Image (cartoon, rainbow, N blue to C red; front, side):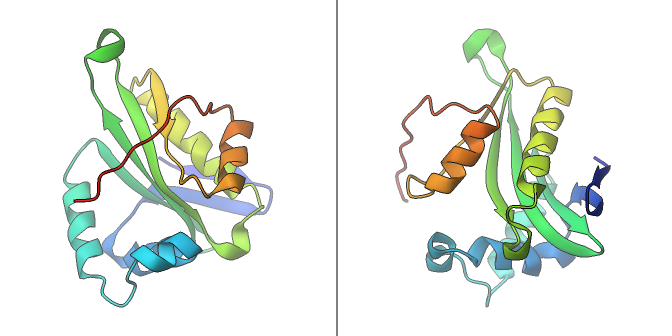
Length: 157
């Protein structure tokens, strides 16, 4: 992980720390879906989760920082597998861009970082899911070369 040059200055993509959690949670909560399921008033579960994620070498929660300000985040999970001839795959989750950075190209840079890191980790496939209501996100991912190839299912426990 390291610095990326952008058209508007330096961008650093680095592992998230506990100090970053308030900014990450604020971005997670800053949309209609996130506002219903996130709780920025109580950071305890998020801090516990980050501690657990940070201890797992296959989990990469990163933040994008510009001018000392967190402007984006995502989680990249590396999954060894048996299918596809023992292929390793990665899953991109929880992609969020700060509201005043949307449309700046930052999302593209974060996804490109995740794809490059997946290659570095010897993944043969990168996958992600996006809520069915996020049609703008679907167009964004398709523009980056992702295909809507599967139907996702969830079971809330």
